[in-house]
Length: 290
Image (cartoon, rainbow, N blue to C red; front, side, top):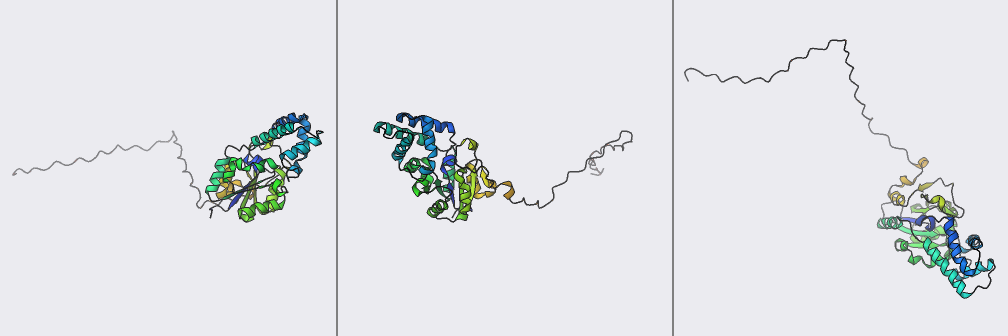
């Protein structure tokens, strides 16, 4: 039984366990997979962005089926098999680059697990992450992972939070949820009875998201390491208006000693007595008859 009041922590993946992904990175990734198909990079990027609600719930199938469907939307209805394969490989390689974790992520996950606290991942994602989850270094510390594309629903659907807690075997009041706020995930976790914490790291503003909760006023952390600390000391994650008042001091603080009165040169000073010398021992008395 863990010492912490929380028996499980559920993490979002992209933007939480991984660093932020700026828009320029997604542009470059789109250009790499658009080139084999001869599609304009910006048009290809828009096709991927607009299809996110479908891809997040697995609506377009696996990667090959997804690339084929999006190419048709961009006017390429029958791509050559070699071009299709190269586009899929470029997309897969680009996604694997986004699976890189934050520098402190593995250390935090290991610390949490060694405290006998279970770990879950709940991610809105397309099939690339779900298909290759076992290759992600974080997987060894995670007890269970729930992916939207496998469940056919996305955040903040209550069924997703219920499913990850069911797999972890915890009740909502014992479960901490950590995410950057994408897809209204924090409100969804709170509605499910979990304690929701927004990870607002220094790269938070750079991360391109979908329907992010920028107005979140609940619990917050600025680094993943704060989550490990907050398991035992939740007050470090609480906003100022929710923190308990500080306990009064048991004793009044000591008062400084009053300053000595200044010496007035116009007044006579008390005479200084001469220092007393130490008494000398009396010489021994010698009697004449001895």
